[in-house]
Length: 497
Image (cartoon, rainbow, N blue to C red; front, side, top):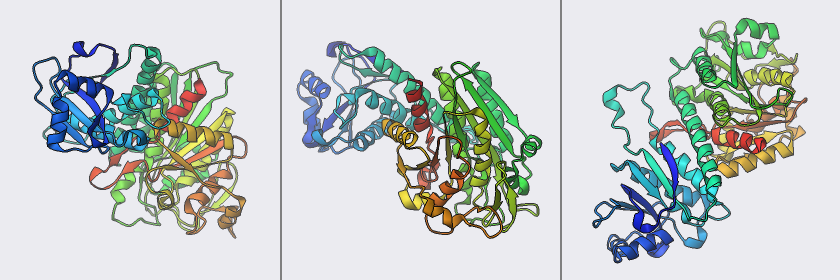
């Protein structure tokens, strides 16, 4: 999709479709008012006839227009004018995008961003429009026959109509960043939606290498099991023992500034399929465990965003990729493994495997002398119980780092909610036979998982993002969301500035 800015007068507007906003009680926005006056009150009459009140997400499409250069209008409800929140605005954008997608329009102009959203600047409104439209137009086709993919949307170009006095350069930068993030989200979606028999650890590594070949500043290397064993990653390697697919550690290094500049390290859990191992999961919904690599997909995609935007920052992406399957050689409850850090771990539940591959990768991250390390993982169902599917869970050992992630989440609406890592919770991880147990019992499961990882992050600033509830949607809309690519990308953009 091509996005640009337009500052033409009303008389010069020419488009297949114009997106206009209206508020509760059919109060028209500024552009809609001007168009209505030019059309002799046609919009007002049609709103009264068809009776949409203006609730967020209500849509009225006017397909037949009087002679002129505008072929159709899509009127989108925004709710009460003085109470337009970020969530309501996004709801309106989603409705507008779906309505636009269903038309035959190739070119559209939007004026929806002229509405005042509480505490949100113009750049935020433009960013949301780009991201939501790209998400709406996303189509998964890789494993579908051509007859089942349906016709692709015809829309090719969207323009934002702006006041001539607007700082165009700021908006253009926003569009460029938003489009790069949306592209990254779609890559993460593609990887997440692929089935486990295609998206194996080796396949995931190949996709990272492919991305590296597209960008000169992005270097990729893959560590195999022999190298991981040499490094002493006994915890990581134990997870793949029940699989025929060898584990891989994907290492991506983006060099956007001088070699002396410390990097930000992103770590993403890359479990390409998780059956739970010997602690086998229930059959219902197990197909969704192909999404257990969404953290890794997000890290790979975010490194692509950094390279696409040529950010003046150094970033390292580390993705431990593995499968967790039951087999005669697989981890057993009660087994004890030794991590790269030398910590012994009693495996009480083989389905708590994400922390086993992450802890060794966090230890590996230390060699980069990082500014900060952020790991992201579909780690615990307990996080969904605690927070639902709206925010991701956030934990960390540094307040400033966590606050910067909260800020980035608010800026992109890829939000996080911080949970405590109090020393009290460490009691639950005690083991009679090893330095630490890999689970802490039924209470505070998301937090004790974070407390487990905390033990391996004493030498650097660290944050953990649990995306178990946000990485994919279930039910009729089943599919990867591409989160937390917006959050991670905005964090890097903020630090690059």
